[in-house]
Image 1 (cartoon, rainbow, N blue to C red):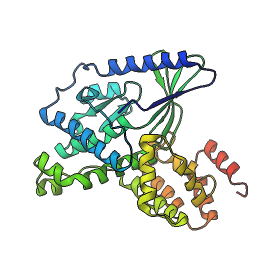
Image 2: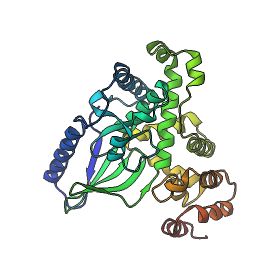
Image 3: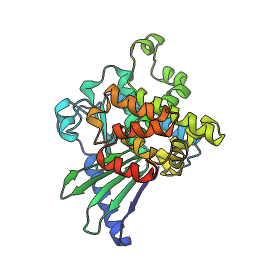
Length: 323
C-alpha cells in the first residue's frame, strides 16, 4: 500500500512538501532500526505480522479499497517494559503503540497474556499503521500530526521533541479499529484456527481485550444514523470503517444531523487527551453513552455540560444557538 500521508499547510510549496516527505522517510528508516534491548521476533510473531497483512488486505478489498498494505516485520518492535516506556512514556498500562513519526509499532511484550492476546495486539496496531495520515507543515518548519485514521491531534515534532496539547476522536478511532478487527476475525476465524492451530478451548479461555464500551457507543450512533437516513446499518458501518483508511469522513456530518449541533464535540471528547485520565471510569463513559441514547435535545445539552471542558463547551454552546 502506498504511504497514505497527506501533507498540507499555509504558504508552502512543492519543495517544502518534498523536504517534509524526506524527513518522514528518514524517520521511518530510523524507526525500523533495531532498538537496544528489544526481543528477537519469534517465528510465530513473524507469522502474526504476515497474517495481519493478509487479513487486513482481504477486509479492505471488501470495502472497495484497491491499494493493499505491505506490512513488514521490521515495522514491529517487541519490547520489555523499560524499553517500551522509553518509546511511549505514557504507556504504563498500554499493550502496544503506533508512533506516527517513526511510523512503526511498539509492542509491550511483557504485557501479553497469551498468544491470542498478542495476535490481536499485532492486528490492532497494524490497522493504526496502515490508517490514513494527514500532517500539517508549518511555515517555520514544524511538522504536526493532524490526523491518524479518525484521531485528530496537534502533536508537533520540533527540534527532535514531540509535544501535544489536545486531541479529538481518539475514542471513536479506537472503536472503529476494534470493530474492524472483530469483523476481520469473525470473517476469517476458520482460516485463522487452521493457520495457527487454535483450539476451541483456547478460544474460550484465552480472551482478548477490545474497547467494548466505546464500540457500544459507536453501535448506537450507527443504529440511529441508519434509521434517520433510511439506510442499512451495514452501509453506515462500512462508511465509518472505510474512512479509517481513505480519510474521507464527510459521513461524520450525519452525527450532528442525527444528534444535534455540537454532538461531534461530545463524540470527539471520548478518550481524548483532556479526558483520557478519567475516560475509562464508568461515570465518564456512561455520560457520553447516555448523550447518544438521549431522546431530547434538552437532555443532551445537560449531559454535554458535564462532559466537555470549558473550551469545548463554549464551542458547543456556540453551535447550539438556543442553549
